[in-house]
Amino acid sequence: MEEQNQERRKYKRYNTEVKIYFDFSYDLQTKVHYEVIDKKKKKPLPGKYTAISRNISVEGICLISDHALKKGDDLRLELYLPSSNKPILMQGTVKWCSPSKPPEEIKDKNEKIQYLAGILLSTVNGEPVPDSIYYDEEYKIDWSSVLESVFGNYKLLMGGKYRKESK
Image (tube, rainbow, N blue to C red; front, side, top):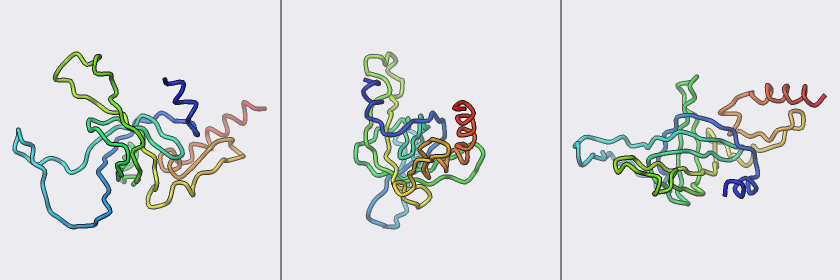
């Protein structure tokens, strides 16, 4: 099955492990003060969900979370790089979500089920992702605002490496 998924992919994936906070985007803008209360502990829960990125491409991100998502959910994401306190703000749509392990592999009833989700990103820091995608002829690599925001000018390092190998 993994082989079939790779054949459908338009762009290369880069393994990442970046902390992500996300919540849901809504078309309606309403200011409401609310708290979600944990039934067992009677204390407020955070308003955002947490996840860790698994990989990233020029137009999307795969993440793992304790929260199941639905195909079509619109998300607001905040990625936190280890070297920065300022988040990278992204918006995207869930394209797929599935448990990270098949149910038969979960032996402990108390084990939390984690979910893998593929997110097609629409904006990074307010800029449209589709408009930023291009093939860099000099470095022979697909690039976009998504990769630039996470990796910075890493393509220059990668490009230099590839140029030396091609000579």
